[in-house]
Each structure stands twice: as structure tokens, then as C-alpha cells.
Length: 318
Image 1 (cartoon, rainbow, N blue to C red):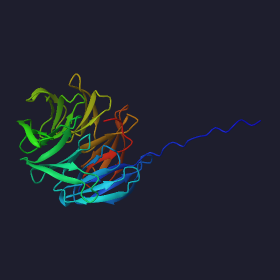
Image 2 (cartoon, one colour):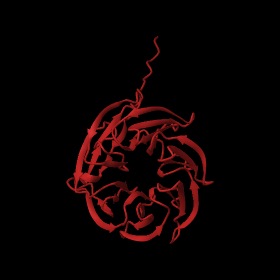
Image 3 (cartoon, helix red, strand yellow):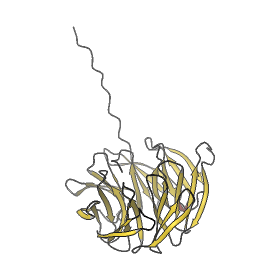
Image 4 (tube, rainbow, N blue to C red):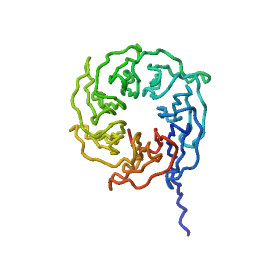
């Protein structure tokens, strides 16, 4: 008697990699196996940052000069919709509970807090508060409880904390030169600030009523953007002028590894394999692929002008 057939299930196809081309007003869609550009999706003017909705149904692209958001399906790479009337969205973040949506108007010096009302399909974002934020609000992070948004103010070298429930600032403090990306550790207590005008990452204790500087970690010239390694201990920071990426141990607050970053490394994403780091090399017009085991750039994919945000659904934990 012939043994019964064993059912086999084909592995799920790997999802595409997305790279924003800020000066070409487009998204490069990259095949994750061949590492070739499949096509480009037109966006509004100057797309700089992207963010996945916490329900993982849409990838949001912020088009700063078009005052719009482009919603893209993270699996099929098809445009779902374009939402207009979102003023100067340079950077963007959803709160983990999807109640709040926050944008930093880098050009117009304000921070907007929206309520997310998905049942209103025509206008799902309702402006709750516009907060003046001179000068040049840049990057945003929100705590795990969806209570506080932290925003860097690049040209005034400050950091502001905003209570989301009241939409009022809790505090504003001076930090180092030209703060850019901000990363809140999983404990919601330590805030890492990349200093693009210097070669340091500052670490602040934000657990109390007033923040306290803990440490300044020397990484490389123009410390800029962060990506957690997903192990709740290590954090990558791109050093744009140094053309390097530093791996920081968040327990010892020391650099434990220095990786190549291509030419002008900026945003990063880490694949689900835990060893492949994707980097937008802004000055090279390429996406660099760094192997964390060999600590080498193993390939570079040509994309558009001034590549900025990079992201894929097949990523390691953040």
C-alpha cells in the first residue's frame, strides 16, 4: 500500500524592501532575493520618512512639501490611498495604541498631534493640537504606554516632551548640537539622542519629572539615525559624515562594534535573519547591505536621489 501523501506548505514569499528617494519624489521597490529595483512608486514632493501603522496594514510615507501622506500596502507595494491636508509632515509616528498620530513640521516649526479616527474613511486624522516648536522639529519617538512624545528640535539644539493626553509640553531642555533621531529604550526610561552636529549620542534619563543626562557616547561624526538590534540590548546609530555605523550596548553605554556605512549612511532596517542591515547611503544614491557577521558591505543597490527612509515588513523586532 502506498503511504499517504504528506501535505507540504510553500514558504511565504518575502515581502519587498522600500527606499524613499527624497529628491526624486518616489519609492524604490526592491526585490529582497535578487536585490534589484523592481519599480518606482510616485509620491508627493520630498518624501523623507515612513512608518508602519501598528496594525501592520499600511506603510505611511510622509511627503513634506506636498502636505500629504501616501498609504502603501507593505506586502503588495500597491498604493492604497493618498491623504492630503497634513501640513509639512517631515517625520511621523503613531502611538502604539493607534490613538494618536504625531508629525514634525521640520520646515514650518511646529508639531501636530492628530486623533486617529479610522471609521471616518474620508478624514481619519483629526488635528487635536498644533504646538509651536522652534526651531526645526526633526525626529519623534513615543513611549510604549502611548503617553509621551519626545521630539528633537534640530536648529535650536533642544529636546521637547509632549503629554499626548493633554497635548501640552511637559518640558523642553537644551541638548548637544543639531539633535536628530531619538530612540527610547524598551524600559521607557533612557532616551538616546543622535547629535548630527557632533560625534556623540547623548543618553538621558526621562523617568522623572525632569530629564537627567546620563552619558555622552562618542560614536562618529554626525551621529544621526537609530535602529534597535531587536535583542533589547543593542542599538545601531548611523554616523553620516564618518561613513560608519556604531553598535551601542545599551547596558554598558559603550560602542562595541563599528561597521561600514557606505557614503552618507542615514536610515536603517534590520532583516528578520538578524544579520542583514539595510542602510540608505544618501550621498551614494544607493541602498547598502551590511553583513553583521563579516562586518562588511556585501552589496549596494542603485536607487534614486538622496535615499532616506528604508523599511521592510520582513524585519527583526524593533
